[in-house]
Amino acid sequence: MITDRQVEVSIAILLRAGVLLAAAVVLLGGILYVAHSGHKPANYHVFHGQPKDLRTLGGVIHDAISGSATGIIELGLLVLILTPIARVVFSVVAFARERDGMYVVMTLVVLCVLLYGLLWG
Image (cartoon, rainbow, N blue to C red):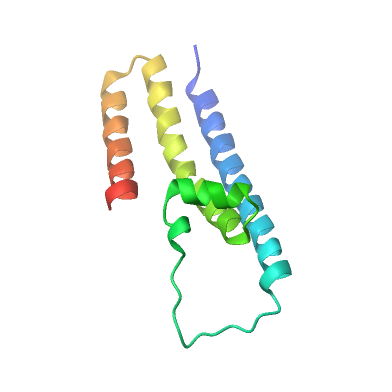
């Protein structure tokens, strides 16, 4: 049987690891971006949105795997966004193991709201 303290410690480790992983991935992408594009002057007079390939999950993953600096940065941001969602999923599992049906239902509602906001918000 898992104690409440063990669940709290596990959640803290999960959140810390997610943030550190996201920061490391964004830092790597930033270093690559500066190394490849740091010499180009910035043009702030014209707004350039993200390329179409970085607007989908598959595109971000493909660009990150291919070594694109912006793809790696975007992947790090996705890891950061997914970190609290992973915490909620972990909480659902922990409450289910404790057989606490009311908290499972409430946490699943929170998860649905998070996923709705992420996917369609």
